[in-house]
Structures are given as structure tokens and as C-alpha cells.
Length: 101
Image (tube, rainbow, N blue to C red):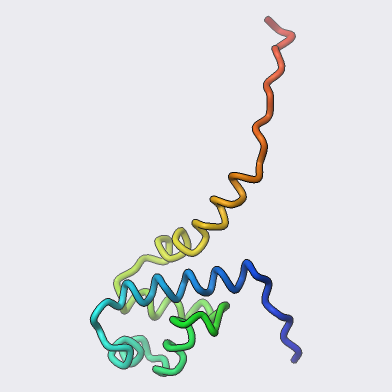
């Protein structure tokens, strides 16, 4: 199977995910979190460093559960910067006067 290259947006999203997981892990060791999540420490290291920008959903769900993060919070955080950029690129639409008045 050939894997398509990641877009710059996907790479950035992976970096935001990694940063979020590192912050949430805090002082806990990578080994402890990985074992509690039932993934390899190498997988967690790659996700936290952004080298795996699109990890499998069950993997993220397991890590989030171990760290006490809701999946909603993870989703909101990793997509936050994209929405900010999109919001700036949309021009306001001028409202026309209603003909019904």
C-alpha cells in the first residue's frame, strides 16, 4: 500500500496533538503512559514528537483515557489553530436591506 504524503495542515495538526499529549503527560514518564495505554513507548514518542501525524483513533483514545483527557478536548485543541486561520480568511458578508420592510 502506498501512503500519500501528508499535507502541511496534517503535519501541523500532528504537532499540535503531540504537544497536547506532552503537556497532559506532565511529569509522568513516557514508559508509564505508554504501558498504561497498551502501546509501545516508541509509538508514544513518535506521536508526541509529531513524527506520526495521523495516529489511529484507538491509539489516541487509549492515550487520552490514560491521561484523563476527553476526546472532545483533544479534537478541539488539535483543530483550534485551523479554525482560527479559516475564520480570518472568510470576509464578512454585507447584509442587504430586506424587501419585506
